[in-house]
Image 1 (spheres, each protein chain N blue to C red):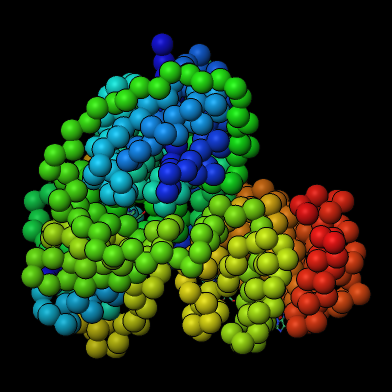
Image 2: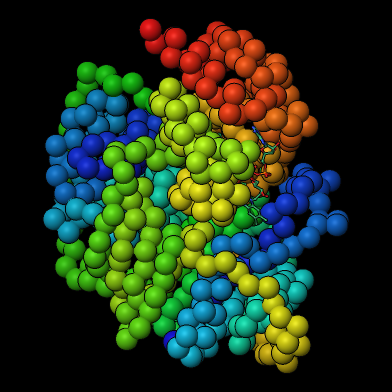
Length: 325
Length: 249
Ligand SMILES: Cc1cc2nc3c(=O)[nH]c(=O)nc-3n(C[C@H](O)[C@H](O)[C@H](O)COP(=O)(O)OP(=O)(O)OC[C@H]3O[C@@H](n4cnc5c(N)ncnc54)[C@H](O)[C@@H]3O)c2cc1C
Ligand SMILES: Nc1ncnc2c1ncn2[C@@H]1O[C@H](COP(=O)(O)O)[C@@H](O)[C@H]1O
């Protein structure tokens, strides 16, 4: 019987938010292909997550455990994924298109000779064929691609797909043995500078508040801070303010920054240049605050307020805080 | 230090993308092309390292005959030589692209092989890691800092948990993330010199496609354009709409 293998990313002893998204698509595809669904975790101590992973509906949970897999290394994780692929012989492998997932998928494809459908926002299977939709040209077009549902890896853009709900089920868990001798010796992590607090990555955020040059200077960023706090949002920025050194570049949204699809994207003082839109136009709801009624951001915004951020943002924060009382 | 940079010719990032009449290609009339921005960052860092410590920079481009223009630009920026693997194929799946590049890189000696983290047309974020795996070289993606000396590179990369500093034995593969370097403009002298620099040409093999491009479509339309109002007076209505209509609060 054919198998679909869903790789579940973990971080600091937890399943990542993408895991139930990948499992939901895994179940859908497995059902259309008449296949079984295997879940796969790789790391050190991931066995502890087997029951939780199993509750999202796979038929089996595989895990590759090794001390050397504590932190992600391309070589180590690709070796581990290869062992799992040789064990489960999947026709389709699903991976989240995250920082780790993109590397792992590319490495696995090259190592095992699998084809890659990267960063897709829709996927379906019919008659042994997979069809996906994938943004190209930085979101300025969508490609419809098809491939045999055989020896193929699909990476799923995070935050786009519906997540599976946990059920009471607990399918069998199996350990896949993997020899990792001599792997990873060529790269060595010498330092990890963790981000301030447990900040959620922009690509995983449900709500994002981004600021642009309309904020007039880094000394006004408290407006973005306060709105982000009131909304429980992650903070983003336009390239203009990243280039000006007001914000670090891991906050940049757009063609040469991050591609995000939150439920709510609030753009404050951002003009909406085509390169910025490339990174956020798939957001479910876009709000823009800008003094210029002609700013292109208003063409994609679901709701816009024409006004000065210095006045509108504090009023918005106050109104949002009223809701919490 | 001998460095190879893989660069792709792509439509300008500011260009509007119009779908061609066949529904599966883009209308290239009047379309400006550029070196894909991340590849240009990789190239810039390679040139800086060459200037600091000597060596060579070679660019490799798989693409249409027209890519000669972007290759000349790379040479004008300061690359020493180029390999142009010519191909007219419009869409090619990532593994096939990686295999063609890897086949051409196999026999060459280099200390570092650089890629962009992502091409801004295909957006696969895959080729660098694929080529590294095919060539059995260590790789680090998304590097924002890269220094190399004594057979070893030290890189900084942006991981989801924070910044990582990684040491890698050379030869190795890196993919450039924004922050690595700001590309220079070619000087007049550079442009003159580029005309004399060698471009080796090869022909891409015809490979059976693993993936079929069925269609290209405009992105899903957004029904934007609704101005709720002006200034602070519009705030209560915005919040109401976000709660009851968009249901995002
Ligand atoms: C190759 C390439 C890649 C790029 N990649 C990216 C990318 O990834 N991401 C990105 O963002 N950009 C990118 N850009 C840059 C992009 O073209 C724009 O320059 C940039 O997005 C502009 O940023 P901004 O909207 O903050 O600034 P501006 O365009 O200067 O806009 C500022 C806005 O603030 C408004 N404003 C002014 N005062 C106020 C006020 N008091 N209150 C409210 N609003 C106010 C103005 O009306 C204006 O609309 C790229 C460009 C190139 C060439
Ligand atoms: N046709 C090509 N020729 C040379 N390099 C390429 C080509 N396609 C992709 N690359 C390289 O691979 C990187 C990643 O591309 P991609 O996986 O398509 O996002 C690019 O930034 C380039 O460095």
